[in-house]
Length: 250
Picture 1 (cartoon, rainbow, N blue to C red):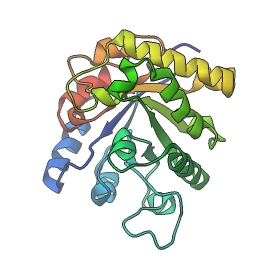
Picture 2: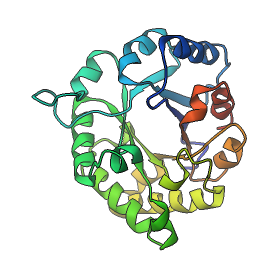
Picture 3: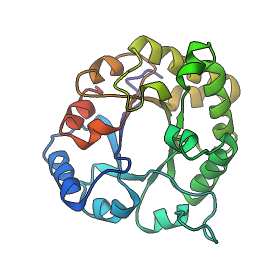
Picture 4: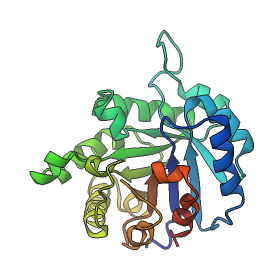
């Protein structure tokens, strides 16, 4: 299955940004943006605005949460359960993002447990992997991403509801972007890992997207390699150039 047969996917991770007014501006330019029907689009607002966005976003855009916990209820102050997300109409959740791993100390094991809980509930998952700069410089990139992906893959029963996001930590929010060649190299490695450890069909059908300082200026080049099926966008998803990024994935 070629990249043209896997439908392009663009996610907008708004992180801890937004207010009702600023989010309504984003919804307005997405509504007026003439988005390509060839690209699946998902936006991930902060928890406080999930219902607002879900109610106002156009029907051709889905909504994701930025995180959830591994249990559906209990004494877990400050956490959000997969059932709660489903109850308010959220379809997707981002799990394993580097900021969860490296700012909040989430382990591969915990991320795997979260993936299992989310999928058991019926959510779709954007599962993130990626190496830190010292790991890349010491030649450990493949070792790191296969360890992270292995913990996720062990909990997945339905790969049609999973998108893998390769996000090199050194490129997230730094303005430093992996070259298309660097990104393609890791994407191809991840696809081979899926073929060898899950199945050839899963390898061919699973979308693997790139994240790390994607913007309107570099999105077309990053969309070109055969194993890159789209992108997970941070800061640029808060701006009108997000429409350019969406429409570059053709």
